Length: 395
Image 1 (spheres, rainbow, N blue to C red):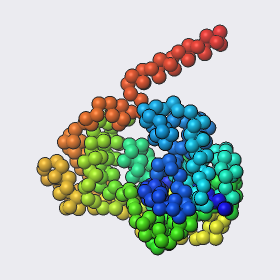
Image 2: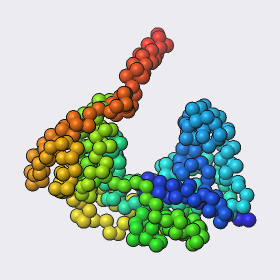
Image 3: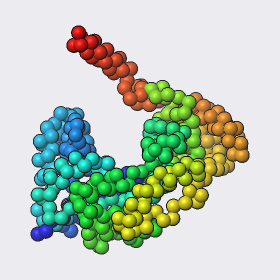
Image 4: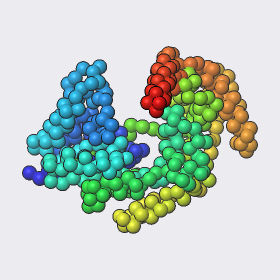
């Protein structure tokens, strides 16, 4: 029996979680059809990273649980994980094997080579599947994600110099990552799909993926239609950004409660300003031209910053929902005056933060920063000791 592996590598922000949750939930039906979706939970990213990162990861609970270990144990041997991985790859009666991990998209050439050496003895054919998201939509999605995760403010991400230099997280590097995978697995192995509902088979991401990886038509309806993540609206992103912009890492006790309380507030579609989106398009122009030349597909032909860009509406419905949290009316935002509008948003943010209060979890990650105070002190002592040691060695 010929054996084929479909290695789904993302890219991030292209519905990978939806694919993973659906295939994980229907593993039994897929298995009965001769399709093996690796039994390492919905996403396989952590397993791949544990085995193929240059710095071998300490095995976390989400990895050890697949080895039958106590989830409190994090020092399980990588050899055990590797053996479990090989067992999953070589299940009998599986003509098709599917692995999915969006973190693989950014693998280096060395990681790809190590992965190829590991996988190639077990399969007759390996295909690499990547969905590529249009740059303007991706920039808006990443901006929302980074604000929600307190990883950066809109102003930091929208720095035009950083965008033009390709250093902003808003700028995708299509060629760098696709070319890395193609150089190891071969150009013929690459299956590149545009992440666009209008271009999906059946207008559905899950049906489209089923079509790509050879899932029988009879299973398409069962697997289709799952969408696990929804975007925040413009108003809540601006409020969270206001809080981040005027606080500093390690001193954001109200961030998590504020984010949670705003979860269900209705609002308008979020977009970065048009000049920022135009800068993103200019930054990816060469990459997009390369994609089109390599594939013959007119990737992202309809991308237009003028059609995408928009401002928060601050509608009556949105302000009523915010008033419900505050217990007092929320005045209209004067969008005609950007300075006055921002001042009003900052005042509203302070009022909301005061109402929701600090996180009940002492030492939460937004309150403590990347390291808690105790760990910071330990790190400083270690750095001091290393400096003393270096000086002693020089003497």
